[in-house]
Amino acid sequence: MKAGIHPENYRIVAFKDMSNEDVFLTKSTADTNETIEVDGVEYPLVKLEISRTSHPYYTGKSKLVDTAGRIDKFKNKYAKFKK
Image (tube, rainbow, N blue to C red; front, side, top):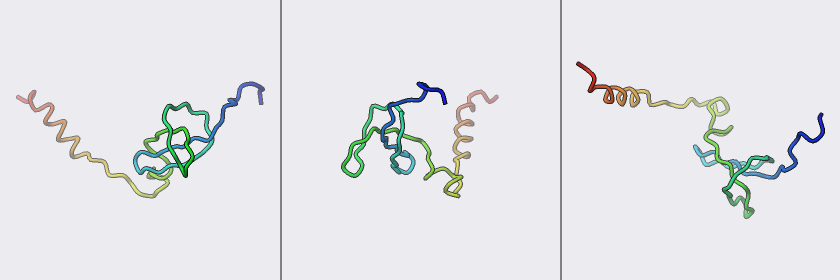
């Protein structure tokens, strides 16, 4: 490995899955301005949209997408151009 190319500022960071509120701790160099308290200790916080606890591949559950609502919204938006 080349010397001097790897970051030196690893620290414990809390990652929070916003879809199911799961929080897990790991080492990271990610920059963040927010913090969260876990078990009485304050950690830097990184918010995630999806993680191992909510991704369908890991959970075995598929996510229902509201395609009917999207289609209705599209039809209503472009109904004014209908002749």
